[in-house]
Length: 317
Length: 280
Image (cartoon, rainbow over all chains, first blue to last red; front, side, top):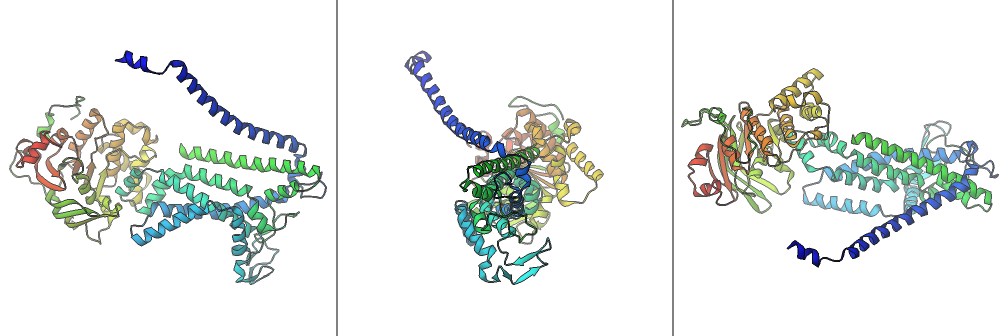
């Protein structure tokens, strides 16, 4: 019986050839991706390495390419990304926990739940410029309900204090960070939901059967088990926030800023904006400065991702 | 107590006879633990349990047998109200634990589950250390000093006959244990909260015969302190390890009585057919 089965099979050579061909096609696809990335990195490195020194990191932007630096933009990016992280991470994880762990049994509430879920999924696909406009209306101008940003209706401290806050926020760090929060919030929610969904129900049942409340179940069982996945999603979202230019361009408006922000209402610029500004200038020298700026941006991104990997592995252990 | 029977069809253990002392007697003096009267349950429109009436005695092992889908697990999950997690599930009738109505709206489900521990079909230790698994329940409910917690963990692991195997590696991940050890860890975890009832939903179905024997030995020990209700598909297990047996078929409690009677001289023909393997 086995003999006939072997005789009727396809000739060895044909199968082996097709198998190898498939591997070759996959190799080619992967090769194209990696080669593109490699060429990109190499060209930026060649262009940017010349200008990559202490001056770039410590100088403000300048009209002279030799003196131009990225320091204010770097600080601005750190400011807005901090605001973004401190707001988006708790809000996003909280929403994900609500949507995954506290599913309503009631039919009306279940419908509302489905509606919210559908909208969050849709929001993840909205172009970031749209969020820029939304941030401009909601945070910078506060729907013009509270007067003009130049003539705030309410202030805390004066512009000399580090804790100065005004309503409406105006084109400051806070409005920028909150707008970035809008951009990354759906990403954080969806990835956190996926991480929570990957936690087996048997763990939830185990905790509940021991007399845990739903809150204790979430804190002691579900969240710890989901942390690695949540971290991955959050870090990816933050990487996107660092690289976003469009919504920040709408919020910050001006690009040529030579000082660092003193408080949350202060004007700011961010690294993608600074790079955009340099890359758009006619002088060839500024293009090289832009390449250096990209290198700095990528170094920060890689540091973030490396930190994420380390934290994730620590939790997974 | 400790002899294991690695064959698939082990002979009755000699220890069984005196472990079940008092069984040949016409009257068992066990007090009632769980009273069930005219108990009905539905999943949506599906009438899953129909008019159950029985009294599960205290500090005895009661086995629930019957073909898949007959409602054994459903019933077990009403005793600690795990069915609350199923939105379409509802129940009517009397289900009392030590006189307290479990279906009453005022019943504190979280408190109830401290008194009714549950062991699941698949071992489900938390991805934490062995120690943290056992300490999980006590940490939820009680403020304990380190020393007290250590004691509870040791006592629970000893009760679950796991202490000697893990005492030197309490801080290693629970998932590094074997399947049988994990299941005993889950039993230790349930005991640590101090329940009076232990529900076991096919606790041995994912285990090899040796681990199964270990769990059965353990149940014989635990029945001194706990009321145990176990769902099993293994007829030998039910006849070996339980004092009372309930045969269920399609949501109906066909027969309930002392295990030796159910297995040697059942009143009902369906029971007879099922335990002799003629259907199911």
